Image (cartoon, rainbow, N blue to C red):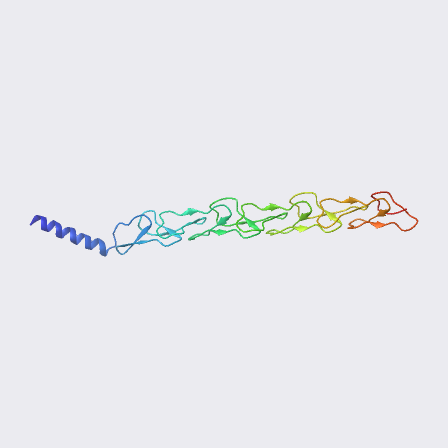
Length: 201
């Protein structure tokens, strides 16, 4: 008789726990009125009680996560994410666990998504814009001999340069050029010049 009362009490207690949703669930699950269910993607449950959105810079790609995974460098998430988003071209992110991507600065670019660092424009090229996806070639009559520049420089008189040049070249003897020239001009008949001349005499 004593045993029967004990069993009855345990049965009533289990019914009470079921009604009040006090069932204990494993990590990665939550208690849905006495039923354990997997937490959805983008959330996690470290204790089996409730699901929590993944914080910014983290994600969970499968249901039933007990912890979220940190986004790798070159990606980001804004919270509650089931996947990390690659940085767009023109941006980058060098740190893991990020919630945003940084713009490439002037003189730099990124052509592809998911970049960790921006690349510097090479000599002979430049970009004056932030968030660039490519660099511009220096125009004829200008040059740039440095990496990561936002401008090209004017060739001085007596020199010239072609498209995308990293340096200016002296005009040969018998020719001349004003500043910002893409070509050298032949001296008029009856005149001459030394190499690198701005005019003929």
